[in-house]
Image (cartoon, rainbow, N blue to C red; front, side, top):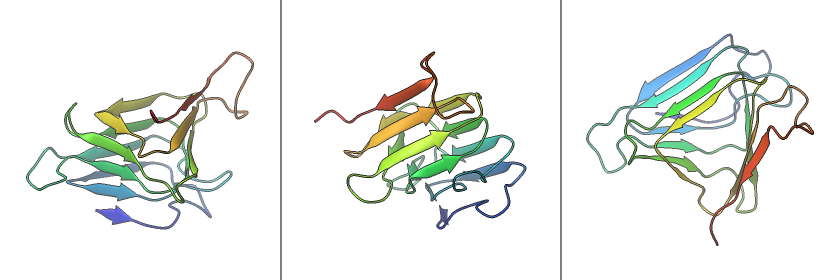
Length: 132
């Protein structure tokens, strides 16, 4: 399953649920829109060379609660967003981000921001960087 472009960019979706074998997901929303409720992306642990993979090909994921399930702990959630130096940002409104599977940053940075204001002194913004 491949979704390109920005899902919920003009008007936010109330929820998003995707289930498939290999899932490639572009941006969710822009600065404000995206998914106002829960987002769930689940890859089946089935046949195929990339069975169970989820690839984030965008740089912006703007929603509330987010669950990324690659089907098994050994399957990958890959961050491939944009140009080689692009930062992929997952922004929620202080909601849970759950990832099941190995996270492969593909030499890119990933920021997970669970605050409504885009970061806080309390430290709810987390940046993961690839091992160089």
